[in-house]
Image (cartoon, rainbow, N blue to C red; front, side):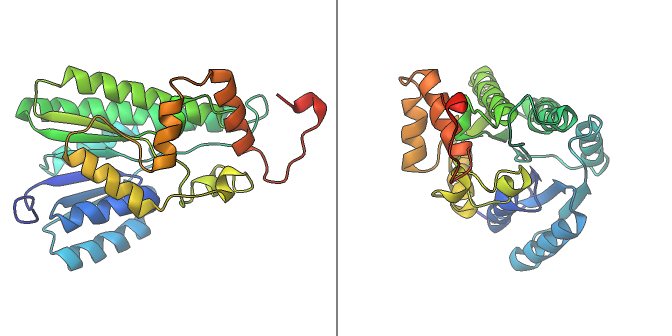
Amino acid sequence: MKEQNKEKTALITGASNGFGMEFARLFAKDGYNLILVARSTDRMKKLGYELQDEYGLEKVCIITADLTRPEAPREVYDQVVQQGIDVDVLVNNAGAGVHGFFFETDLEREKAIIQLNVTTPVELTKLFLKDMKKRNEGKILNLGSVVSFMPSPLMAIYGATKAFLLSFSEAIANELKDTDVTVTALCPGASNTMFFRRAGAAHTRAAHGSLSEPEEVAREGYNALMHGEVRVVPGLANKLQATGSNVIPDKALAATMRHLMEEENEELNPESKL
């Protein structure tokens, strides 16, 4: 597979850690040239050099971008076009959340999260999908979550953005069903990445529960992407949770999610109980 992919390029957002780093490794192993996009230039350069040396990649392009900026998606696209690169695979991996009651969390931070989790992947998909459609070839992976299927108290904005991405991905996948362009939504559960710490949720039950390893999640997402699957939920427990969301009332789902997102040893007072 490496030989047949040596002229192909994968663009990965949030490529400096977590799932993004693992996706970069998987694509490099299969011979894809890489475009790595994130804010951490040094981390991306280190990863890019390592992968280029290990797998003999022809090109690794580093684009430093703050994808919470409204201008960033167009700037990324323009840089790719200026370098004459066709993106064969787009991985919209970058994302963030913030933990806490919505009436207490910071609005400006949440607006930046909506930009990062929703507007940026929508715009990148729009820009690169038009080119893929013209060539009638390409693949797009959008990172959803198991919370795409249920309300997520104490992470309300994050859960809502991931629900959007799942619906968006499945809709355009259907629109493209008669083409050779595919769209896949990857919906993992809680994983051993920097997400909880960055979201201020490192103290929650979810963060101290059973966590998936990012390389396993990325591998399952990668395989689903390569087979043109529309949706993939890694892990048996997560699959059961996603399936159960079709029959369990939303109120009960919300109660379960709130329990997971509360402090591990928190004792609720009577006024705060569901």
